[in-house]
Length: 307
Ligand code: CP
Image 1: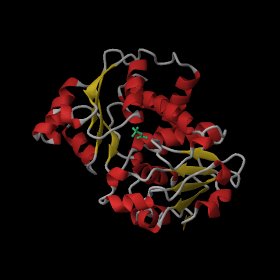
Image 2: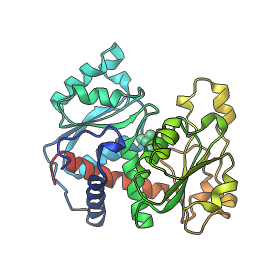
Image 3: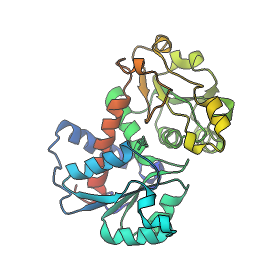
C-alpha cells in the first residue's frame, strides 16, 4: 500500500495506513527476525544537511537490519552542496544511486521540493521548523505501545513550541484521534503557531489550552511531551540564553504528576529534564528512541515493497 510513496508530512498517510505501519512495527519488535533481509539489495541514501544522532542512525540501523545498505553524508560540508550545488541537482543525482532517500535540511519545504525532483521515494527527516514525520511515527508508536492506544488522553507539550517541528507534527497527527486534549506550555515568546491552534485544532474541534507554568498543569496530564529550546533556531543569542532554562523537569515536579503519566522527549535533551528523572519508570524517552528504529524498519520495508 505504501510502496513507492514519499513521506513529507504526517498527513501523507491515512489513519488506516498508520495502523498497518504500527502493527508491522510491533510485529518486528516482538520478533526481531521478522523481515530480516527483506530489503537485501536495496540502498538507502541518508542526506543530512543538519546534525542528527537518532534519526540518521536509526534509519541506518533499520536499513541494515532489513538486509539493505546505506550511503550518504552526515554534514553538507562533505558534499557538493559546499560548492554551491542546488538541492534539486543533488537529489536528481542521488536518486540514480539509491532506492529511497532520507533527508534532513534546514529549509522548510525542502523535502517536498526534493520529492518533486527525485526518481526514488523521499522521506522527510526534518525540514527546518516545519515537519519531522518519522519522529511523529515514533511518538505515536510509543504512545500506542505504552498506553495501549492513541486517543483519550490529555497531552501537555512543554518548551519551545514555536520552532519545535516535532510538536507541530505530533499535534497535527493526534488531532485525528478521538478524546485527545492538548495543553501547550511555553513562555509567551515560544507559543505554538496559530496554524496549529486555529488552522487545525479549532477546525477539528480538539479541546486545547495554553499555560506558562508546568507546575500548574502537570497533575492533569496523561502524557508530558518535553522539548528542548533550540539554539540553532534562534536569531539572537541573548533570547536563547534568557529562555533556554525556562522549564526543567525535576524529580520534585514529577511528584505532582499522575502515577501513570508518561514523559516523552524526541531528544536530544539539554537541561530541560534533570538526569535524576531518568530512573523514574514514567520517563520513557530512551524506549521512545528504540521505537523509532522499529517504526522506521516498518516504514522502509513498506515503501520498498518488502511487505
Ligand atoms: N529526535 C531527533 O530528531 O533526534 P536527532 O536530532 O538526534 O536526529
